[in-house]
Amino acid sequence: MNKLALALITAVSVLCLTTLAFAGSLAPGATVTCTDAKSIKLESAGSNATDRANVNFAVWKSSNLTTIPISVGPSDMNGLVNNGAGNKKDSHFKCKDTTQCIPGAVDGGATHVRPMWSQGRKSVTLTGQSNFSRGDSIGDISGEVRITNIGTVKANVTCG
Image 1 (cartoon, rainbow, N blue to C red):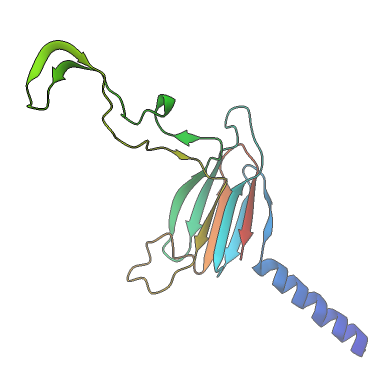
Image 2 (cartoon, helix red, strand yellow; image 1 turned 180 degrees about the vertical axis):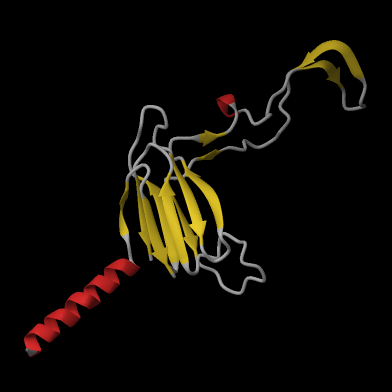
């Protein structure tokens, strides 16, 4: 009898711990729930001909009954063609240091603007934060949080 009770208590404890910390693959259209997580990690786990490796999530939070979209795109680059970032622009005025401009001349000089681009990320981690004056922040992941894969690429979700 004692062995049976011990085995039952152990099984229930393992079940409770596994529901608190979910880590696994999330197929397109599937939903997972995290409850009172300290952090939630969302990451891309595959690719698709149309979406490449970009995964799209809908995150619903019970703390304020809002749904937010999150996209993770490791294969995307957010920038201009040829890493331009406006660093060189031909104008039809040739200006001198004295601010005299010659109409019709082409000025192809650099504008000295640093390249502003960023590579997409493979994962994003939402970390729970406390002491919000309002519960409308993405950092408020207390309570139940439902994550749905609304894209065509597999994803990994880790509730910590």
